[in-house]
Amino acid sequence: MTEPLLRPDWALPEAVQSAVTTCFGGVSEPPYGTLNVASHVADQPARVAENRRRVEVLAELPAPPLWLQQVHGTRVLMANPSSANEQQADAAYTRDRHCVLAIMAADCLPILLCSDDGEEIAAIHAGWQGLAGHIIDATVARFSARKISAWLGPAIGPCHYEVDEPVRSRFDSNFGFGPGKDDGHWMLDLFAVARRQLSKAGVASIAGGECCTYCDSRFYSHRRDGQTGRFAALIWRR
Ligand SMILES: [Zn+2]
Image (cartoon, rainbow, N blue to C red; front, side, top):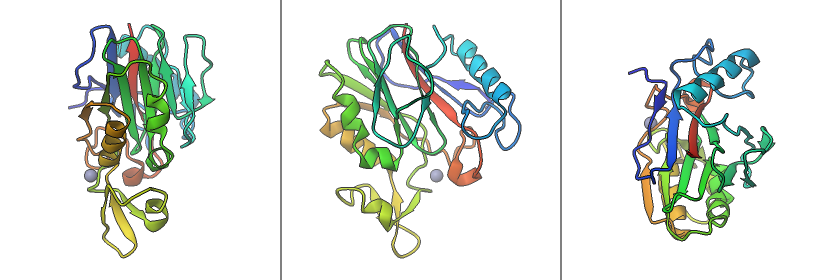
């Protein structure tokens, strides 16, 4: 199984498409092998550019993706087809057609959102910092529609995501934190925390969230591999 591109399994309006890339089918070399889409991980720029071009072709995108400079913050970029690349933001929202939203990840949780009428879409980079800072609330608040669906992409699962007390203490409660292997450590379930935050924000339909990047070698995992590439979760209106 070496597909460069997977189609997320969730109920989307016909006019909206989504995709997630893997680590296969690109031109990058170790430790970025091979379909690294991130320009901030010291991979060769020409290789990243070629990988991004391949993703555009493979996913049959209507335009190049809008790549963000993700900083583990909570800014939501209101995107349109003329938005500049590499803006600092950890989520993007649009009502525009042909505006391809992209989130890069290698353990952090990418979340895709779509209104049930297909008019509004968003993509979120939800690591523990984004979740602790309520980036889900900030993004859902941009939607006019009340009925929204979400898809949780691959992220490091509670089987492998051990964190310490300073991380846990940034959250309002212990929800999503199981006992860690060592004292003062916890196994964090990003999916559970995200599902709960989405539900509280009024998102009723939530799919995905069963793929651990550390366990599944199709995806980059920073915790597993250290210096490595990033895969992308993409959503766009046709
Ligand atoms: Zn795992």
